[in-house]
Image 1 (cartoon, rainbow, N blue to C red):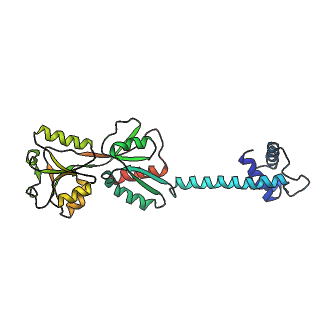
Image 2 (image 1 turned 90 degrees about the horizontal axis):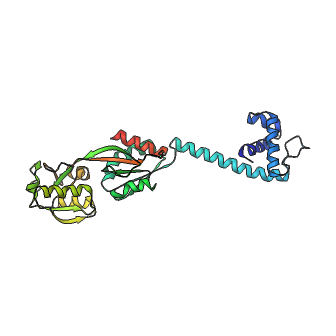
Image 3 (image 1 turned 60 degrees about the horizontal axis):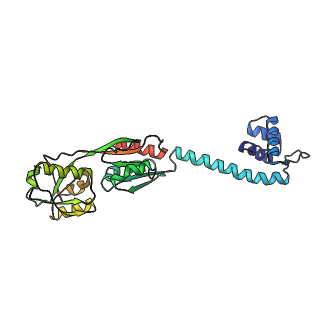
Length: 292
């Protein structure tokens, strides 16, 4: 049996006859009769009392009618839910970001929420090095990273860029400058993030090239903690400008450019190339590109 035949049974029972059921289904009466016969052959018993002119169901017909209503209801629910997903009246977007990269999503998240308030957004905190594997492993649909992943099978969409700046406290001797060199930083004590990254290695190598000591005296788990300790005069730090823009705007820290350390970084969305994004995820990518 199939759903089309069950739909005919329900129509005949509800319309109390073959002709009215045919009109309702926009089919011919012989086609309706044939569908009922096929259904009876499938279940091996009569479903309609042929002595009645009103499509009266037999006991087996009543039993199958009840199941048919439930099955057709499930089909209707499934069609409605798919339609809602397509029109973004429901659904979910799952993303992976770290403490820094999520900052570049804030504008896009706010705009996406305004446009699609019924779609749930879930941002998972992950290590930057693990995000491409999480996307490929289907843990999330979209990741945001500051490098081009080496793994094949990922589409990379740039949405922002950022620069590395030197943060110092307002009372620091260098605070009155706008630019400094690496050699001027040999006597400084640095605060650093305790998660190793490609950019950290590039900073270390740059100091080595200039034969300047890089004195990291404290490693911390969050950029927010680093910013606060710089403001308190505990040390200086090299951080992405976006990660400290609020503190810079409030005058709690001063951002300087390091002449020999220009490390612009692209901020990229990544998602699987071979798999079509869900309607919600595709809408988020479009929104993020617009905000960029």
